[in-house]
Length: 200
Image (cartoon, rainbow, N blue to C red):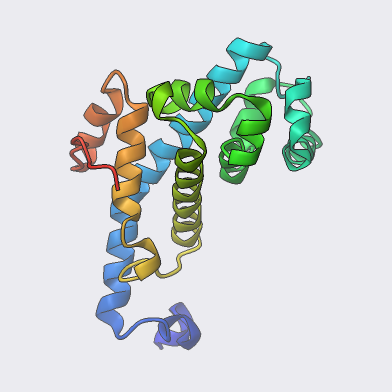
């Protein structure tokens, strides 16, 4: 009877039914963190680019984005389905992969945006922003993206060594973006205390 609801193939990734339920419970805990992380990240990046290049920077992309052809292709892909021509609609429809792509060290260093952008989004002191830091940051953001995709596709993340520090990374990123402590107050509603996390 269980096969009707959960296939044997899916269950083969778990040691037993209890671990499967623990994975669901863990994913449930992570959802608010992922929700506010993704929305805050894209809004802070959009705010940064809007101030520099105007509020229609996704509709009329500045030449600086041409440094990475994959960024332009992703904008164009979403724009095909954006019949309203509304900038906010494009922001809402672009993937997390697109926003994280804007933190690719090669792109940031070639555009010379690395210090401004990272400081604007995460509040990191510009003196601490260098190539090594950018590589670490980009890897961490991609870990979160992978973690998010697995949860949203109902895959196993609980007891997965690859995501051992994923929740701490999320808390760290949210804390860095939360300059006015708004997110910290909001997450308390979900039983999550966004205390100052250590840098991993």
